[in-house]
Picture 1 (cartoon, rainbow, N blue to C red):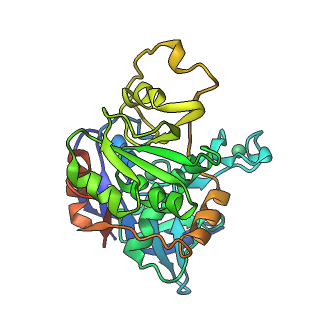
Picture 2 (cartoon, rainbow, N blue to C red):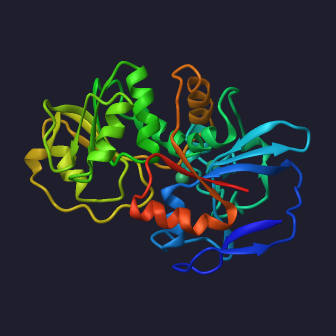
Length: 317
Ligand SMILES: [Zn+2]
Ligand SMILES: [Zn+2]
């Protein structure tokens, strides 16, 4: 099969022909129809988070077709032990032995992939392969972050890329007001956010017209945490949705006082997946995608790093 492979960290992905993968017991062989690009792929490529093994095929938002014709989604959570203290308490996202797609298990920047069938997700009809793929990490982990904001009616989103453009639609569907914060001066992305239902859009250095009840930080920029905290109403929460973030600068305790909190979100549970994929056609979530052929996966990562597209990059074989 053809694959776009990370052989060395901080080096471009390279196109290779690899032996076809062979499914083991409990696994399913999938022909990859589309694989959306996540910022985590970029963090692995740039060694901001460590690849567990090299070479590795990145890509963990896979839409694949099984040999019996079923369409399945393969997310970041590739396998858990099912028996650790986290798995036994409904927190398999924190499993101490978890294996992740496109890091510990070869992922979807390839013609074929194998996945543990118990961790594959059923996909809703009515969304094409390219348009459903961005839900499988940007959507799912964003949805988990949204759940952790509770019922906050006024929601800030810092960084309006793949995940935010999906979760904005879900939040508006739930009747919340969305305040979108972008890089200062990025009026195109601010207009994009308004087109998806955001009540207000401005730069991350600006104050919203009224205090917000929660903020989700999608960008990997630690400075945004104290900035978001300053905009929170008492009792509000800042949720950091990324796997990697630059250091968070210090800030006055008064900004945290009055029961404000800061927390992170890690990975996803299958339950997050079932819930979002059930909700998607009812919203209905519409994803904005830029398509890249498999050989251009490295270019998709460069364009993500430079912020050259709105929405999500999707690699297609
Ligand atoms: Zn476990
Ligand atoms: Zn991801």
